[in-house]
Image (cartoon, rainbow, N blue to C red; front, side):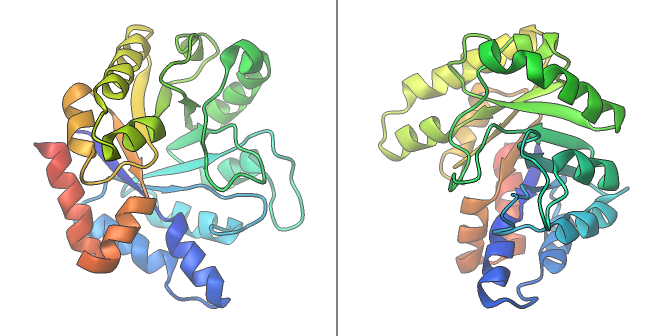
Length: 248
């Protein structure tokens, strides 16, 4: 069964917009876990625009022994006031997985994967350090990356396929080529001994086709669409709807 890991960044965005404690990230995580989600994902950014380091610590404790905790982020972003850095957060919370993403401070959201021709050498020691902390390591990768197999060579356990282009094509109803690209990338990764995750802009409309094309998906990480849909239907029914899609 493909694990559904719910990204709670948008809950933190709403909370931070009022400078208060509501909606509570803990309560949202508890609701997702109770509804059957197999994981919780956060992407703490240095500017603390949504998930903050104290949220990461709290969620690490909440998830431990119950569901997988996945921390995403740029391992090369330096520590600064209020943000100790990704490696420190992993060392403090011992997540099941750390997903490395090549994002910069100014990005609204992650919009591309690693180029391992340029990034492999500096990623390799970072991956080793994260694995020494006990975390499974996944690399965020474009589906058309020429070097996706190198992720295994430098020590990564999984890749997370960037599904933004597929989701955009799906919304325009001409997604066959992008879906095929996702499936081919997944097969290449599996052939190299890597587990395959997927994420970005996945929703209830486009998730089923992706799962059918990649039946061995290990995990999907979904936040923006799921939280948006939950505004209308409720968090528990929305999580359960995603789980039903993944089970079909």
